[in-house]
Length: 535
Ligand code: FAE
Image 1 (cartoon, rainbow, N blue to C red):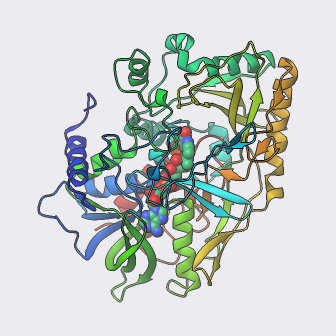
Image 2 (cartoon, rainbow, N blue to C red; image 1 turned 180 degrees about the vertical axis):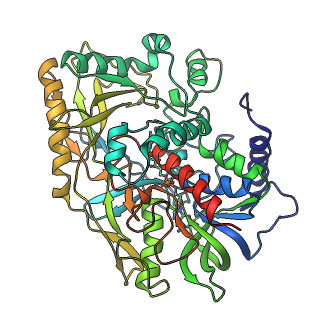
Image 3 (cartoon, rainbow, N blue to C red; image 1 turned 180 degrees about the horizontal axis):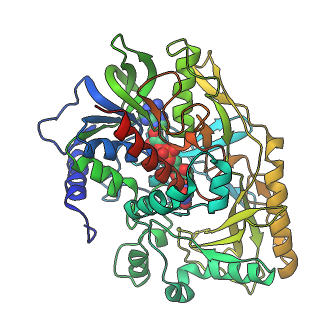
């Protein structure tokens, strides 16, 4: 147990462990509620950042709340392996959501395919394909927090004010960003340790190259426990960040939502989580509440039943893709026909571009690399090509003479979802050419870096010969944008007591990795909704 764990989090974590031990799909800290009622006063769809904030604040306000999560619970699986997650070098069925092969962001090395065949299973990482764009998302109790790189960055205040001008930036930076950072367990790397850690040699090499090109670098806060990481390097505790664990989950060290917001939510005794429950449809009930049709899955992804649930207050926290699809389907099938035109619009990939550089033979990046980035190159104030580039690891366990980056760029292009009746799903119309402004910005920064260091791009990493990969994003944002599809607090226009609480609210870009912004905005919105919408 982490020191400083509150009593509430303790009871919530105990509930998660008990459910895991008995293979339950219902997680609750309230003994009287072993099975969720078919009616719940509040329902939250999803268990990612926005959802976890909503459920916790509802639970604390004494409102019985049911969370519905299509993925499974990952705390201590009964796999025979005491670790729930597999690592990146030895992926198995737990790696990916209902896939027969892994789909790594770095798809090849020296053009050799590095993906592996796996068994189909309700694994933790999903890559959802939409033509020219595919979107990585986390599946399971904790959503994206299970698979992400833990970088906990608040956007520059001027940029936040630019993307959400109707939100009081003063209040956000005074109150809600600090609140989110505290509750998420954000911590900072000890700069002295960073300078000596073997696991961050790769970041120091990239930093030296950036500085040689006149570019500034900055440490990035994290929700990975840096004290734990230091003990990993000293050989005192089991390794996680230093054992190639990140996109398929971390067995130790990471403060994912099941350790923080969700444990606190369950600890109120008012929140229940039902796993392997995929919400398929939302309609209006005769009493003005909402009816949900839920598909029940087994661990191989087969449908084993359906449930009908009713609620008075419905919070959508299924992520940019999930929440947008549910709303679009409801509008286009006529179930919630009055939903606004703005549903499905304003989507962007946060300008994501991945790339690699080949290092000189004397510039080794190290066989041991922390899976958790701790440094970024910050050129966001560049007037022509604003870029914030995370210095990413390539933890292969051997020297690769490779530097990898995930660049976040300021790309004004946006895409829309439309409803495809034949597949009953939302389709995104992002085109490859819309990614060109992102590539131009990343190229401007990294050309400079290469020139100064006499280095070159790698063209063997993304399955073909491209040097810049922007056919995927880690940061899907938009689809139900704040102030357009909803009011200024996430209340969906036209339908009382229906809310969006996740990354769908953000208009396609945050300029930095987004989960702190999603969390802080959800905190702000929930404070208002709880004060005004509940009797
Ligand atoms: P999200 O966390 O995606 O949660 C949505 C949840 O809803 C998921 O658990 C889904 O399984 C569930 N769901 C979806 N549809 C349904 C349905 N119909 N019924 C029931 N459940 C459903 O939403 N961000 C950072 O800030 N820093 C990082 O270092 C970082 N690294 C990343 C690395 C990777 C590999 C990935 C994939 C993402 C990364 N992100 C990072 C992005 C971050 O995780 C993401 O912005 C947030 O998780 C989005 O939060 P939401 O609340 O919108």
